[in-house]
Image (cartoon, rainbow, N blue to C red; front, side):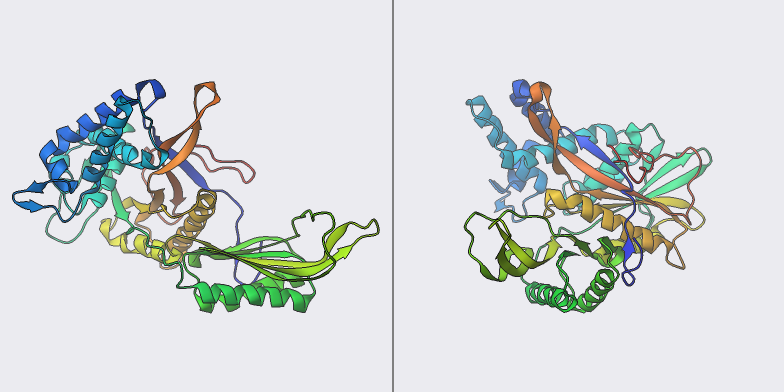
Length: 438
């Protein structure tokens, strides 16, 4: 849809795929699978180091003050294995520990065959650079599995450079991996701006005598300065009788205007004014008002109902995502092409919000790539989530959850990549009415 101030329309799902890493813990082989996962991690890290960095034993007279994610997960999986061997089951809340170890072990088996792994990546896996090094290892393993000649690049002492290089004929494609810091939600910082925006949206409906459902969507916390733009755009949409969703992807804000969703009232509901109702949850705020009435058959309904809500998604601001991409342009040598992988922490994003968040991030990055002077060195950007649990079907109709990284591909129309180079797991762009599959 067009118009609505400078809010652009969303017309496509975009290119995306899911890189799944199953837990490999089928019900009949759970214990053996955990033993294999633990053995792979112990071969790489050593049992003494794992115990020490898990925070459960002193090492050299001192207890580790900085537990390592792999060591903490290893300790917990050993406890889970003991529970299984005693006849217990795997608690759902602990599957993330298994997923982390499984991904690390699986990627290690592949990535250690890549040139320079022993110098560029392996020493960092046991340090405070683990998350960054693990992400580089994961991306390198993707290209290695895809059969493309890939190598980890060593520091030169002459400034920063890309993390990997894929050779295609006589050309080199440089791969830069960047990891957003873990998202730290601040649930109260924008509560007053959200409340003020919701009340203003309701007042706008009163002024325009509309009876609609209007929803504002905010990624991250709400900047009060954006409220005036949202209200002006909503006014334009209602004035012109349009319905649909509009987004300003670069800023991570948008809104929906639609007809009221029917609700059923209980028999015998009283007749009279409906006072504004406020429903609060950590990142949800909703208002509604109208008047209870009776129709000609004596059935209750709400006359002149108006509904508004401000819906916030716990996530990084879009500006910080695009800044991450812009800062990586210098990592790719001039005159060359490359791909930037951005690892986004979505641990606080609800499952039903993930698609919206990643599509808005995709739109924000596309806008950043095409805004003059542009970024011709970047041929594409891959937005990759941290591992999340996704449902999959199993034999007998049982549903299980596997660890997967969901990715969205953003191609740069001003960048170039050599013929014969493929981005692992990419799928063709989906038609507007089709779902992209992974």
